[in-house]
Image (cartoon, rainbow, N blue to C red; front, top):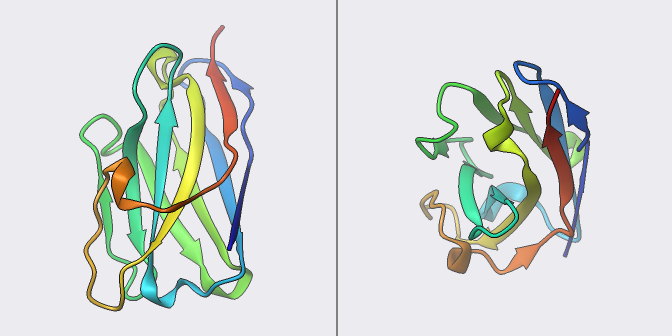
Length: 126
């Protein structure tokens, strides 16, 4: 199983960015896929999750209403659309996956995911 993030960049406050997570070695159906971020000196924070089956989603309060997680099963990709970005969103962003079966829930704890990508840097600055 491999996860590769892309799309990180330097963006101005108020701007938007879309991150992509390319998955290989598994099919989404029985997995939950999460997006996490880690800012310098801070703990890793779970921000969004999507179920492989059904597509239900869950967000942290810090990004709810600004970020949208989605997936394209045909392309084996999960996306994170980030709008209204602020300096507080500056971090390395990771995607992660966990096989939870068809009825597993979407959760945002780091310990609830066993496979991780290498991360992509997002910097929000003027």
